[in-house]
Amino acid sequence: PDTAALCLAGLPGRGGRTLDAVLNTHHHGDHTGGNGIFKAATKTIVAQANVPRLQLAAAERAGTVEKQVFADQTFPDVWRRELGDEVVTAQYFGPAHTSGDVIVHFERANVVHMGDLVFNRLYPVIDRIGGASIRHWITVLEEAAGTYPADATYIFGHGNAKFGVTGARGDLLVFRDYLSGLLAHVEKEIAAGKSRDEIVALENLPGFPDYHQPRPNRLGANLGVAYDELTEKAG
Image (tube, helix red, strand yellow):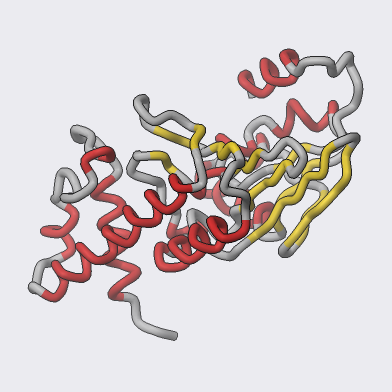
């Protein structure tokens, strides 16, 4: 909420005008926690249709339901509006980081906001309880790379200090390669008879030096989610 207030106060040229819309890229608190600040300043808060349910479930687990402000407008697949001299499109490609992630395209500005669909050279959060799918996340990144312009500026939800939170379309495929490498590594370890505990003990994933961080890092959690996804029973 504090950073949302700073953001609102710092919007250039707003002059107290009501915002046309605030978009939540997904349900996590660092992407919805400012809704209470923005609600009084915007005509609508928009999110993919799964987001309010996922946000409520996460808040119930954390005991923070009373702090939640939910989107008042939802959509299943695509939301598109002409707002002033800009055209804004939000699109859901299916489960990935969660089961409610959208990509927001500012068409005339040529800017694509990926939300948390890209962790730029950073071990990601993979929210399995929130509907994440590593396999489909790979597909989503490939579809996005084929959908949005090569010359756009891409904004990422998180990034390491060296690479930051902006980049190019190719960075989507760099992160795709990490997710593919994660699954391939765990699949190989399972085939070699390793237990889940043995697999998650790895400190850094070979072949991805830009992601390497000292512990504590998220790699163990990533390996665990990959193991669970690869070993889950169909149906």
